[in-house]
Amino acid sequence: MTDTTLEDISTDPFASDIGDGDDSSGSGMAERVLNQDEIDNLLGFDLGDDDGSERSGIRAIINSALVSYERLPMLEIVFDRLVRLMTTSLRNFTSDNVEVSLDNISSIRFGDYLNSIPLPAILAVFRAEELDNYGLLTVDSNLIYSIVDVLLGGRRGTAALRIEGRPYTTIERVLVQRMVEVVLADAQAAFEPLTPVHFNLDRLETNPRFAAIARPANAAILVKLRIDMEDRGGRIELLLPYATLEPIRKMLLQQFMGEKFGRDNIWEGHLATELWTTDTEVRAVLDEQQVPLSSVLNFKVGDTLMLNATPDSDISIRCGSIPVTTGKMGRRGQNIAVRVENPINVEAASSLTRGKR
Image 1 (tube, rainbow, N blue to C red):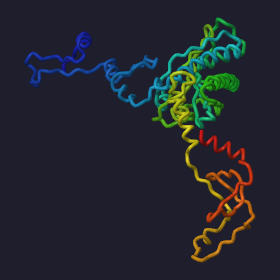
Image 2: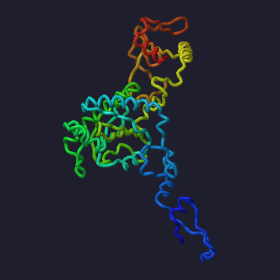
Image 3: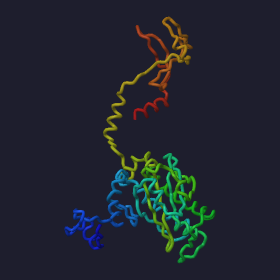
Image 4: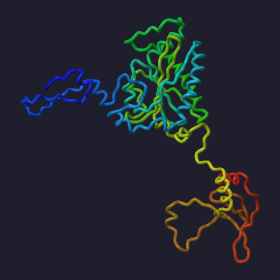
């Protein structure tokens, strides 16, 4: 094997040294070992790339199955609204000059995200009640110590004191929990114009393994928020699995707030007109009885069924399964007839009207 210089690699990364004809193997080609940068480029990994930009190489192929958040355009509007609400709420919460900015919205597999969380951190598991699923809010160490420092009267212009290698104290956890509740209330307000949803804090964890709210291979939306308080601050990351957003996926596909998909008022009016001329089944029910299944199976030709009704009993007139009015049974010519005795039931008419709409 013949070694190559760094200059040769930079000019042609796939070049091979050609022997002078004296190579005993007769191949005339020399093998070359890729350096770490070339391996990273081939695989599409960049440890310094944290902005969710487009990947290349093998990693791009692996992530190609993920759904891009850009297919859910309403999310960007919701999270932009969240940033504005958080800026106001956290200023009131800390009595400090707080600036919240949206760093990035991206798609990621849940397992990859858990493995990428920089520890120590506090992970808040919350439940979206109307969506019947969970989400995850991660507060990094810098923001935790900054919030504790601000709320406990730390002076401006001094960096928050960080003590690594120890678990968070009860006071620190309580203060972070209060901040998380403020953020969840703002998230609830951000989703309100789109759909009512309540985000309730379930628990706080410090070990990512105990915050597993989805399968490792499941896709999720990751929102990275930057919180700056003059010379202090940190990050909050909001993760929502696609399974959580699935019930409101059609709403998130809207291009703008209040968009109606495929809504055609002319067609709706025509359809409503045609429904009024639709034939429907009307039944006159003389009596109803509950009979054991064994008795029904033993019915024979010639059996007599006794009804709890007389010739003068009221007969229930129904449209489908909805009682509309009552009448009396009689005869008209050679046909058995029913004469309506009472006006149409208002509630029944409303139910039928709603059904037609």
